[in-house]
Length: 165
Image 1 (cartoon, rainbow, N blue to C red):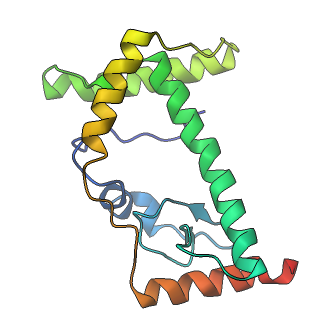
Image 2: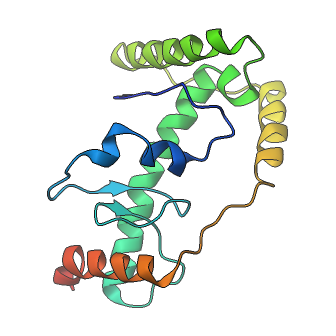
């Protein structure tokens, strides 16, 4: 289920820019954690992947981080298969695009509640999606962060995964 959606940012905006300008950033998480990809800066509540896990705790962390992120990524994939316009690009007036994105999210949730089958992708749509993705993958992804982020992540790993070893 999609629990929250903000569609006012242009597609060229980096995920981390949107996140760090959201109301979520200001909230206190207590013992809660958020999982993100390598494009996010590490925070004491935001877990990002390690470049090279070495210890048992780091490997447990990495496995948990990847498994959790995969669930989220798969759900976005189902949403995009249900509404291919989300993958191919919406070529309409910007004022209509936000409403369309939110509407597809609502319809996606309704389909999930009604236990609708996950749609398959036709070859033609998949070829168009692959073309769009190949263009998007050429954009640089800054996965390697500075030492301060590495220290923050190591503290999180030791606190949450070190006790498991």
